[in-house]
Image (cartoon, rainbow, N blue to C red; front, side):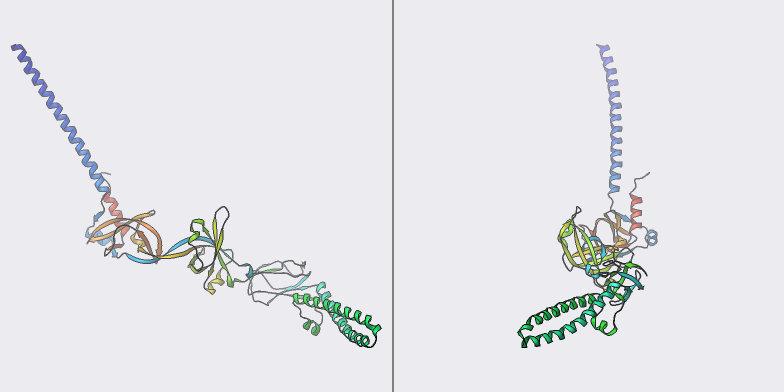
Length: 398
């Protein structure tokens, strides 16, 4: 029994030693896990910091300026692209219904012209023949009028002369109709019968500008033979050019006549104000787009437009109130970002925001659930504060 007791005490001693070692191990492991948890907690808290304090030296070196958030009336806009176009009624093609040869010209592409200005002359045998036919038939008509009166007198005195009177009357009507036809043809060619009777036959047709504008194409040269109906000059009247815009299907219901359009040209010039003149009634092509015509308001700006020039435009579809801040106050991160407010001297709070679509006078729209009333917005130095913020948010040792 004594032997059993000695063994039992020794067993108890070993059991106690093992228990102590195990407890110590468990305690160490527990402390290690707690330390790791604390470290993780520290990292999480660091990433969630939304405040930062600056030293006096940092504050002065950054040159921070503050201001107020503004509520502004802004326009909702639909973006579109398009091209400068001339309406068909402002384009002209000069041609003649007779053939001939160019014996004088002064028109070149780009040259400004006035309505009625002489551009070229066409020497034409057909034109000469028309004038000859007119003069001959005019003379014939004068004779036939006298013969008609003579036959009318004879017819009233002698029943047998009735047939001759009717023949004279038919000849007079036929010649008069032919003369009217020749007169109309000469008028189309720019020659009045008064001028023809006074000055006689002229060999050349005058080709004159039919619009105020400029020459876009000259398809003839001196000595060139021109066929009937051939285009000789193409003209453009720039006083009423339109902007043809393409609007996507989802934006089509927003477009109305007389809405304001700000047109931006690719030459870097200032945007030009226009108005919606006409809205298409059908969606076109596979792209399902709507054609919208806009008209430039300023006549002087109209004259500077170049047909075929590409443009970008913003169609103002309505007004609303928006929260606006200076563009320099927004630290952009794609479509979102941050702004900073000075809560106390040298102490700042970062607020996440979404960037809206409206812009106005170097202001941008921001969208946030935060109420900004009486807050001191950082308007200068926001990016430098954010850089300091990012530096302090980095985990220690990195």
